[in-house]
Structures are given as C-alpha cells and as structure tokens.
Amino acid sequence: MIEASVSLRAQPHASWAALEKPRGAVSARFAPEKQPASRLVLAANPRRSTGPVRAARLKASCCRTSPDRRSSYDKHDDIWLAGTERVHYSADEALILKQKAADVLPYLDGRCVYLVGMMGSGKTTVGKILAEVLGYSFFDSDKMVEKAVGMSSVAEIFQLRSEAFFRDNESEVLRDLSSMQRLVVATGGGAVVRPINWSYMKKGLTVWLDVPLDALARRIAAVGTASRPLLHQESGDPYAKAYAKLTAIFEQRMDSYANADARVSLEHIAIKQGHNDVTILTPSAIAIEALLKMENFLTEMAMVRN
Ligand SMILES: Nc1ncnc2c1ncn2[C@@H]1O[C@H](COP(=O)(O)OP(=O)(O)OP(=O)(O)O)[C@@H](O)[C@H]1O
Ligand SMILES: O=C(O)C1=C[C@@H](O)[C@@H](O)[C@H](O)C1
Image 1 (cartoon, helix red, strand yellow):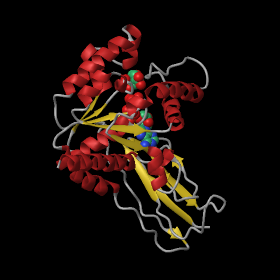
Image 2 (cartoon, protein in one colour):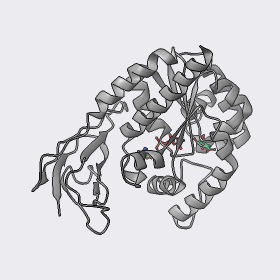
Image 3 (cartoon, protein in one colour):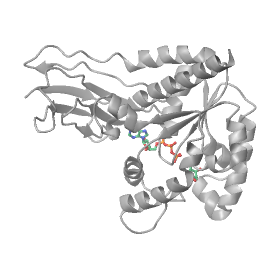
Image 4 (cartoon, helix red, strand yellow):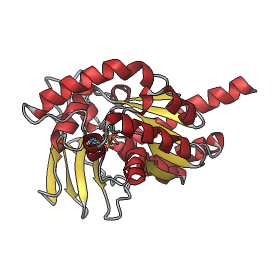
C-alpha cells in the first residue's frame, strides 16, 4: 500500500479543488469555502489497481476565481509517496498552457475561437483560460444576448419573450462577433442548431467540448436548473431530470456539435491520464487538450493548403 498526502490551503474565492489520482487510487474532493484548509490522503487501492503501484503522478489542484471573475491557473503541490521514491511530478500546467498557446497562435492568425457544447460543458470555464493564455478577449454569447435585449438572464428572456426571440438575438450576436478578431467565445449550448450560426462561427475555429451526459447532469444538478430554462423542472430528483432532458437534447444535437473543427473529449483525456473518471479533470487539463486539438486541426489545414 502506498500512501500520499497533501495539504491544500484554499485561496480566497476558491471555488473547488480536486485531487488527480493514479490508476486504482482513491480520490478526494473538498469544498474550500467550507474547509479553508484541508488535508487529503490518497491510497492505492489494491483491488482496483491493475499492477503494483511503485510510483504515481499525483497532483493537487486548486482552481480559484478572483473577485474580478478572471480565472487563475491551478496551483500544484509536489507529493511525497511514503515508503517509496520521490514522485515524478507533472510539469506545471500553466507552463504547458503557455507553450501550447505559443504553438497555436501563429496558425490561428488572429481568428476567433468558438467553444460549442452542451449546457454546463465548461465552455465558460475553459474559454476564460484559453483567452488568457492566447492573449485573446473572452465573450459569453448568452451574456451578450442578455445585454442586447436588456434583460438580466436567459431564463427571463425565455419566460417573458420566447425561445425563438432568444435564438434570433443569439444569431445577431454571433454575426457581430464574427467580424471581430482575437476572441474566445463561449457560445450558448443551442447555438449549433441554426446553420446560419455555423456560417458565422466557421470564420474562426470551432471547438466542441464533449462531456459525458452523466457528468453534465451531476454538474447541473449541483448548481440547480433555475438559470437553464430548457432543463428547469419544479419537482423531481434534479440529477435524474437533468440527465433525461440532456439525453433528449443531445440526441437531437450531436450531429451539429460534430461539425466543429476540433473535438475535445473528456473521456479521451481521462484515458490518456490513465483513468476513466472525467469528474477529476481540471479545467486547465481540458484547456491543454483543446490547444492540442486546435493545433492538430490547424497544422493539417496548413499542410492541405501547401
Ligand atoms: N472541469 C471541470 N470540473 C468540474 N466542474 C467544472 C469543470 N468545468 C466547469 N465546471 C463547472 O460546471 C458548471 C458549468 O460550467 P460552465 O459555466 O463553464 O459551462 P458552460 O458550458 O459555459 O455552461 P452554459 O452553456 O450552460 O452557460 C460550473 O458550475 C463550473 O464551475
Ligand atoms: O442548450 C441550449 O439550448 C441553451 C443553452 C444555454 O447556454 C442558453 O443559451 C440557453 O439556456 C439555451
């Protein structure tokens, strides 16, 4: 049995923290607001391990949102595995992000990046990280529609006007954004359904955040559905209701999401990391994968052109 532990002291405004685990290990999570300083312990679980665990890449991450709502990068701690050699610790994600961004930028050549994906897939969270490392500005098309129509939330627009009214304004926002440069845009979950929106978004690079529906339903149930009118239900188990609705919506939309130039699959990232738990993937790890997928697409396009 190998044990490793790390103490995390959450920064002010920390929103969540998680511990990445090796194959077969037990993971732990805590809510920093409730426990400003916590001690997390990992232990390899012999029943789940596929072989002897001699060393592992362990990482403690703390993601925080500062008062001005700009995201900051994960902080990491080296972890000592009791009874074995010092762990080879993963390279700093912030450094990888910067390096990958530098690789992608010349190919992007100022074009905008549009993140598409289901509600709650992390377009805003990951989009802010991408904007920061690319030196781009971040826009959330839902927020822009709210401003354009002078209402305080998408839910209010759906309720007081209609979904069609919201969609018309969403198309106008995307049209306006498409004439700009150097933006990362988190689009509304349903922006992909209108072909006209693709004609705007395809002026830039489109990236699909593909998150398993089970993980989406858990995230959405955790924050409630009041702000997501297509999912909102007054009664019933929030997870079960969200999962059923998300499944129905995804079946209608999956071909549209697949139009994106690059697909970032959280299941693939988890497999690459040697586990199958998408819930412990940090937004930074997802942003790194997004940059890799963008680079692949852009370099292939450049080769086809030359
Ligand atoms: N990698 C992650 N791990 C855990 N939770 C996450 C992760 N990424 C985002 N979240 C959480 O999931 C929720 C939805 O994230 P976010 O707002 O970024 O998604 P979105 O795609 O912009 O959603 P919407 O389209 O509904 O506006 C938030 O509560 C966010 O903190
Ligand atoms: O998936 C959808 O259709 C939506 C997602 C949100 O981002 C909002 O654009 C709105 O709630 C509709």
